[in-house]
Image (cartoon, rainbow, N blue to C red; front, side):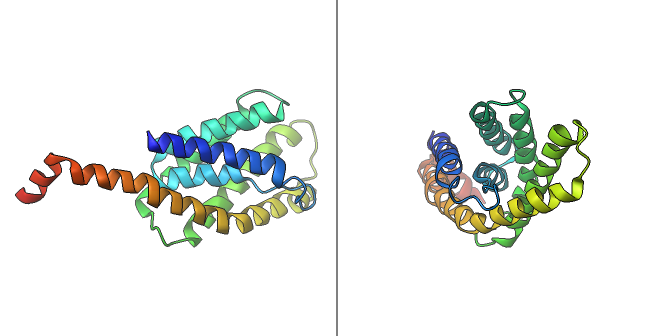
Length: 183
């Protein structure tokens, strides 16, 4: 229950920050993708299933918030990103920041590529280099710069609240004591 509450708060706060606070701070009409950071963090720190769940709700919130296009496109993109970031969960190290930043950069590149294909390429806009210069690179760099601080905050929340609760439950469970003594 605590994990559900924490992820709900993270998703809502990230969406509000992304759509309000960072709009005036946009660099070249590019805003950092906080919901992508939340999705990657959920998958990387927890599992593929948790990454998919968080990604689905982040994408659905974006679909509803933007109001344009087909409902569920971003939900699908973010769900896939959450699933693939969950594949790296066995390599999760709390103090490591470079590996998750690499996952975030790769996910941002994949998301920008998918958006380019479905929103621009299908309509006949073939100027890929212009899109890379004006959208891809600034968005990836801005998201990575913000992710250094934002991801660190998410690791803190994850370790203090979600993992602490799991450790407390394991400590209080009588079967865990019996299993430890038999080893």
